[in-house]
Length: 139
Picture 1 (cartoon, rainbow, N blue to C red):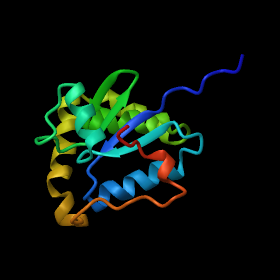
Picture 2: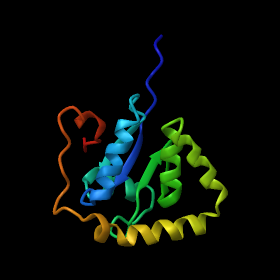
Picture 3: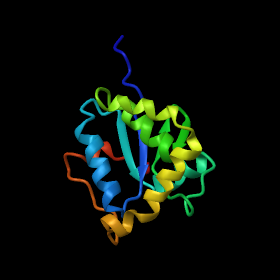
């Protein structure tokens, strides 16, 4: 019997943030096996997943990784995504040696300034037809 393909980990991202969109493209380009799927935080899927994990969608200012039934936010999500990409990005695991409070303080400082530094769009950009399969839709 063939092995079932593992459920993808879902990366929830700010769909109007230019830096976040570039980060999604970075992950896609380095994830040829399709381990990660994506949904904007603002989408119905994003809001549903946030609510299912007890996260406030209106107040979340972070990347969120939903993996194996758990949700990780801020620096924990970013580091886990790096580890999931394999070599050399898996070296991100050394970041777990830094206390989470300190990691998240740096993350929050960057997140607070990302629109000023990188700009934002009025709406989420639709992925190309080739990338459409990597984005999670509401069923």
